Image (tube, rainbow, N blue to C red; front, side, top):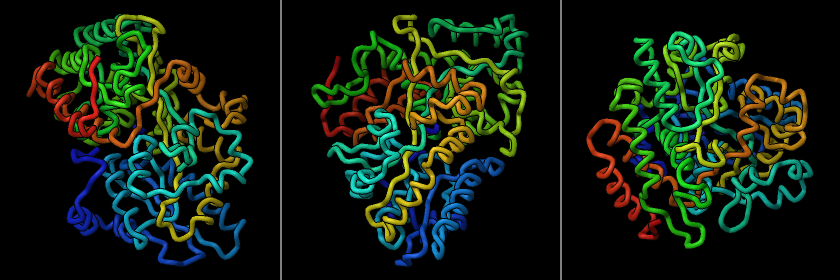
Length: 463
């Protein structure tokens, strides 16, 4: 998750798709991405970075393609990249999955969308394949659960997970008189540090928190849920009531999370609003603001170092010396004191894939222990294979891996039920309203409740 367009991820008009295909030459392959019945050609569709200099996934898949073709003479792998921010990727991918003519054989699925795509009939259950694959026993249960539908069947093989925390510039903190080993205990500690930077180090963005519809799920998960799941006593899910199977309307914790976002932008502790609402702001955080010392604190994900490794295009070998890491605290420092969110992506086989058997063989090649470990390190991901997680070569491969892996103990997972994509959009709309000042926290919360009732077909409750 990563972790985006203003339109809903779960629906897209065919006319819009035609326009996308006509307007973007790169997507012509994706728009005609189906296997076309060729039993010897495997088509693999994936999300390509919008930053031309970052080729982590491209490089990894090119190596797997080479391995696969060597091990399977006569078989060819065609990589079908979709270059787009997250939400646009989801929309384009769903359009491809609707028809045998356009459906690839293997697709990269964000776990938050997987149940929606299952309900839509876009994905094939993998249980018959998994039953005969001994490596499946190596995957941790939480990762397996993220790829499971409400029908109990599994629809994807996870390729890693992630956690989130606070990244901060030691140089900026030194100039502001803040400690190099900063570990905030409350939300107010985070805001106070940002206020100090604003006062003492002019010209630097004190704090970045993603917000609004343009950045999509990054706003919901990297910011809002990191706040929301740090409210209350942590004993119940603040978004979804599993007992009643209903979505929860905006309570005090929801309003407090909105207030935090409002404070960041009202007090000008964050980027300019126009920059914050740029769909590619994440690229600026990773590729410009942090490396160039223009940002003091970033609430962001464990995967950031993938952009700073050798060959990434934004090489920054000094990052581990120049950046500090801190867990995001709960609102008032209440137990357990730390909060994180976890998501991840899976490799799934479309229901209309022409070569599903060949696709799963490709998955098995990607998910050998050696290849999986190579991907976790290249992607700055967190291992979901127990044998990799236990390997000292993995934990020592990159600074920060141990810190973010330890956050799994305090992590939460999104209620990724079919309505979630629409619920997430409603959260983004509320965030955007308080970010721009178009609505007060109370007005934004009421707007969320109205949107939630529509998104959840009235299946809502309050606490």
